[in-house]
Image (cartoon, rainbow, N blue to C red; front, top):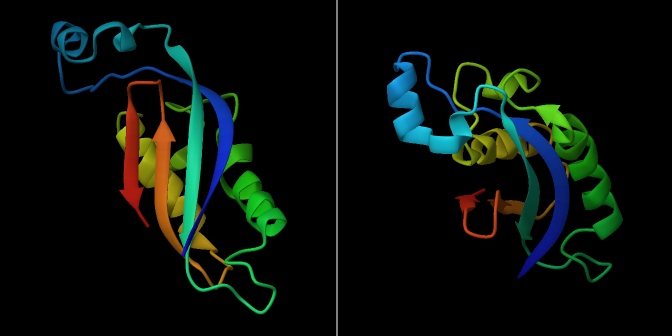
Length: 133
């Protein structure tokens, strides 16, 4: 059985690869290479999987929400992903890399009997990234 919880956060970033020329970066990332950056209202979904415990739940929602808020949302909300998130240091802060970093933040101290099954991050209505747990 699976349970998915949805969270929201806002963050800014600039997509730029230092080893590429300014022209190559503009061609690769378009308006996302704006030197001043830009922001998104991200939607994060965390899916857990397992059998219900004695309380009849896969994970206690309040505990899961508190954990996700502490480990991920508090660290990403209203931050510059290029400079404020150590897990993204040295990599362009694409949403693909953000999903990998988010999964690592969650798995680091995962306290639940249910396993982390999926991390999904929607950057826009058209750009949605899934990563298995």
